Length: 209
Image 1 (cartoon, rainbow, N blue to C red):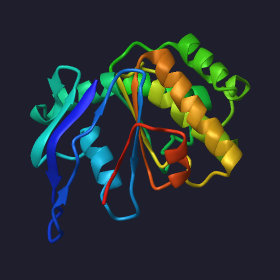
Image 2: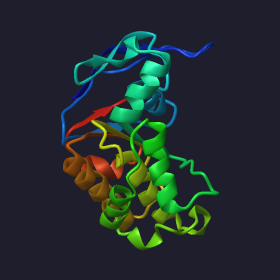
Image 3: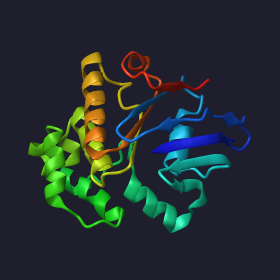
């Protein structure tokens, strides 16, 4: 589903980061571990096409995304990649369900309010669909972020530090939610984190040094 080959990246004035090759199939989960500053978020941005690849390649299914650019890359990302950012970015003026539907619009897909409502319901926040984002708890916002990442049924889900700020109970709950929804959508799930609790749960993992 997603694989990389010989990825390297260097910020201006920085040291070149060399990434191990990774592979994650549909319905599987890959854990990318590493301490702060080793390039975890850089890798996630390369996998999501948010950073331009300098060396090596990223394949999602049969598409080498580093050969796409501009509107083609934006369209591919919207259709095929769902990202759960560490800091969620919502439109405060919109309701919960409107924020989810917005992801469909931005991907150029037909909006489907019923699909958005059903997804929110599966994530146990269907009753919050008409609520304002600012009125949600952090845990509820996280579930909205997951719904938004899944609404277009992406081939790849990328999650940046989804559990590091959570206690053990909520850590397990969020991990299970992500994995269950990824399997339901037939998506590959890549979690980038420094949360070492997950290494005892997820056997498929790489460690960035």
